[in-house]
Length: 322
Image (cartoon, rainbow, N blue to C red; front, side, top):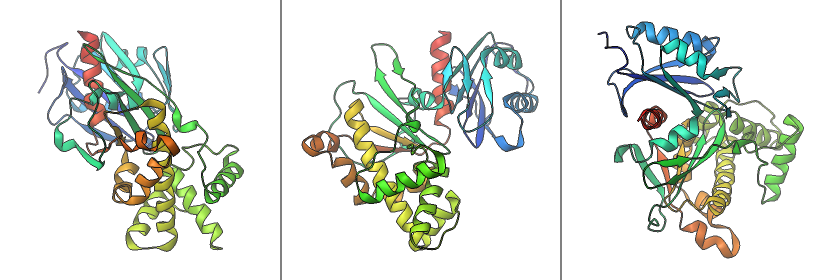
């Protein structure tokens, strides 16, 4: 059914593998408007938006917000794990929108906080009672890895962009240092994302396979499925990745003091959740010497809503338009 001009907004969330698109009426996603596109089947965002808009009666949008997995500078975003570049002018032209915004996808996740139903999040590790107006930290683990601190103000909240997946992977044990050497040989730099992401956990599996004398290449799905079925190498991979993630979560907690909670988002976060709830993650997160109690006090939550970034994009755009 056609919509009146300048009543709805278009929201898109571009990950390394999929793009999700929806229409929004203010901060609310229009029921039945969410669609998912596989990035490998399209040459860029333009064809995705053209296909989506045609399927939805080509609405004349009043605004558009695109969240993407990569850095954004002056309204231009460059995908980290995909050869796409997105800019405000192209989005505005495609959607007929008077106002277009480009933000990082973890920022969109942060703007969704406070607007998700209680059923959209699940506690994986309890912590202390939050401080008043306590900051949050979004940690995204999917095709790539990134974070976004969330700070609350008197009217709106500020979500700070980052590219934390490209920091050096913290190493505590000899096994971690051996993994870092393996990743450095493969990629010239042992970043967090090369171990803690969809393709990263496949590299951790390759490392463990090589150590076991049975070198092979894995996909992330094979690792998770193998761990669920009790495969020795896959299970060792998942346990190693979860311990690394716990140690990194502790470091990030001390760096940002997210006393309102650390929120894990992304497909790999959800896949690893059964192991994150186990003791290895919490032990590694709390193992911070005399500041261990501070890391212990940070609760860890899992965002289970796959469309949270669309909600956050709608919230951010509505605030900008108002």
